[in-house]
Image: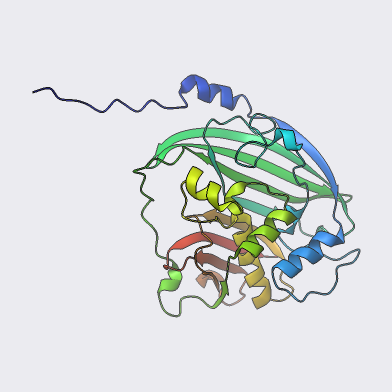
Amino acid sequence: MQTTTTPPHVPLIDADALAQLQAWQGRSETLADDITAAPVRALSATLDRDDPLPQAGTHLPALWHWLYFLPHHRQSDIGEDGHARRGGFLPPVPLPRRMWAGGRLAWEAGNPLRVGDTVARTSTIVSVTHKAGRTGELVFVLVRHEVRNQHGLALTEEHDIVYRAAAAPEEKAPPPTPAPAAMPGDAAFSRDVAPDDVLLFRYSALTFNGHRIHYDRRYVTQVEGYPGLIVHGPLIATLLVDLLRRQVPGAQLARFEFRAVRPTFDTAPFRVHGKPTESSAGGSKTFSLWAEDADGWLTMQATAVLA
């Protein structure tokens, strides 16, 4: 009897291809911008906050620097997914699905970013790594950003980007992780978020983010294989910090780190939670923050350290 065997998987990225991508390591670019008031007003409205109108000298809330240094690629340079075509500052990774996987940020004491500042951001590609995961090939790109104003260094950020292979018909999602909030009373404070089309559109517009997974339902379901529109990772991180700011008015962050664990979709509301860590419960200087989807699965984990 004749038997058939499944042909071995041929990786898209072999040693030579990885070496070519790693040639991008060490590349840097510097962008200039002005911290103007209009984006601050707009994000405040998007987050449903009742903040005073920003004016020159107003402190920029943590993570709101993502409203600046926006990509302004020409329309003819945009790829199928809504991002700029590969091979500019970022390496031309030949994997179609791109996500913001997490990051680590540190603010310089005594030099907050303020409305009215003239700022510059220097970005450097630190590393390009490849591995085979349960759902196919993965490429991780680590970018380091340094933001300076007229007084010097104000913020250092490490930005983790992950590229994934196209969805296979038989692909199964990784096993989910239960959120800590599944245990009654574990969260000290929480908030429900309805990720409707308008919220996702407004955040995409504020960050000039053309990635179609956030607003094009046909593309995200039929091409990338997801069940619904994907909530921006930076938006969830911003909502976690916003939750902390509501709980601790006037809080200034010294450090923040976050990791996306599982995509969040617009198909149901999700929740953001926070609590002081046990080691800092007395002074409440360090907080554990996390997001969970409607099924109780952990979608993002974060730690915030107050100044």
